[in-house]
Amino acid sequence: QVQLVESGGGLVQAGGSLRLSCAASGRTFSSYAMFWFHQTPGKEREFVASINWSGANTYYADSVKGRFTISRDNAKNTVYLQMNSLKPEDTAVYYCAAAPWATNKDLNSIRYWGQGTQVTVSS
Image (cartoon, rainbow, N blue to C red):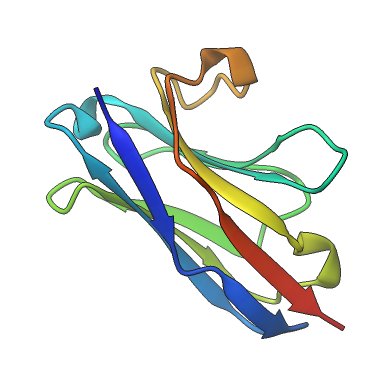
């Protein structure tokens, strides 16, 4: 069992930066690939970024490539999402998630979800 708790969301102006953190409980954190998804009202949850168990491989949605960076620290059971050059369209609730494979973005593959953290980017 893995429990995920996100933090670091907030209100920022366009062009600014935020770093989201996701702290995991449980001894099996390092065996999971970790994900960030986001969701806006009335829309399905969308893939943002993923990272494999070791941190060696990362994957991004086209909309965030070059602006967002996912990383993890297995010693601290934590995954991060550094978000730079934020745009109003990045406004959403951001969810941390754990799944077996970093390359499988299917929502049905997710084993564990966090509760989400709101990110609001003003223009």
